[in-house]
Every structure is written in C-alpha cells, then in structure tokens.
Image 1: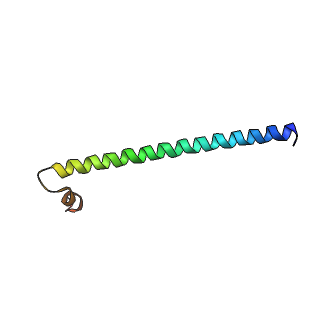
Image 2: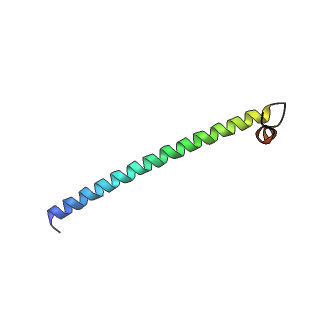
Image 3: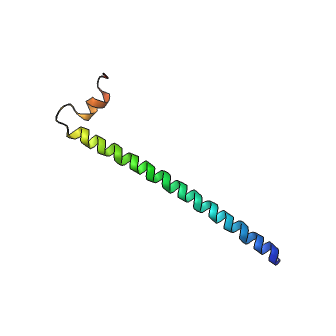
Length: 65
C-alpha cells in the first residue's frame, strides 16, 4: 500500500466513524424522548390512581362522554 491509499483509507474510516457517532446521537435522542414519554404516562396514571372517585381503569375504558 502506498501513502495515498493509506490516507484514503484513513479518510474513509474517519467519515464512517463520524457517521456512526451521528447515528448513536440520533438513537440517544430518540430513547430519551421515549423515556420522557413513559415518565409522563406513568405520572398521569399515578395521578389517576390516587383520585378518590372512579379508578383510572374505568376512566380509560369507561363510557366516553
């Protein structure tokens, strides 16, 4: 391998690493958004469960107004 081929290979590896890093960043943001959504759902269910009136199950699956 000559110097030009080695430099080209290093450039390709650098671009690939950069692309992988961007992909990991996107996955991280998506997982964080998913976790925030789950936390919001959990918090809402806890609030509904604590209400003294009807249970949260009947609120979700009960008659629609």
